[in-house]
Image 1 (spheres, rainbow, N blue to C red):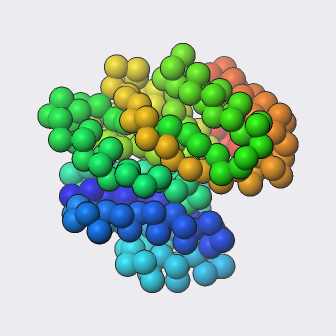
Image 2: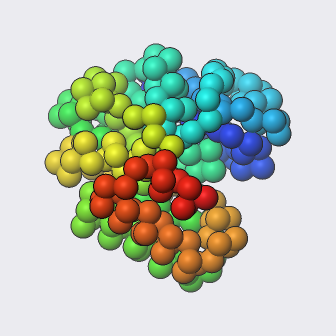
Image 3: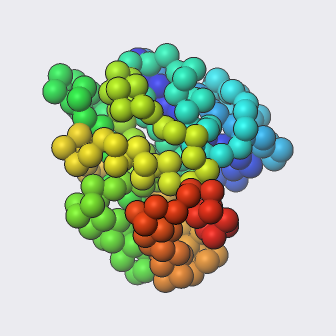
Length: 226
């Protein structure tokens, strides 16, 4: 079974489309569950989750702790971690089934290709930069999803309860040889780029990544990020 784990915190406006995209699994008959790990939403997020048939757990806010908690309660042999504002493009089930059907992939994790829901040419530039980052550094971010066998997830220690950079931390522990690109798009909201700037936002992300590699504590990086 596939367990889809989604951390949430007041994401109601974007959450419905994300869950609607996941409904494809039911139509093609793949056994799956959706685990929503919430950090204290007060905007209707949980009502949307329950209406979609998701199993909801509630706990402390923070993407790292929420992902770890969701994984701990998930029942599937495979785990798919997904952000609440990321919609998998039609055909995602076939891409997942093709990857999980190969026995050798039980020792690897896979990520989707970043796509932004904006026609601005700057969005295409950010998508290309994300692909370059994955190719050069083997560092997919959380908005690209992560598909991983439960046994491998446990073997590498899973998500650590970090307030920020939990996706980079796990990708580093997996390493290049245990990461694979699916090539299938994951359409992610570009709202934060429109809000913060198409140049300023990527530069801030890059600065946070640099501070992480320099050894700064994630809690301090989060304060700068926020």
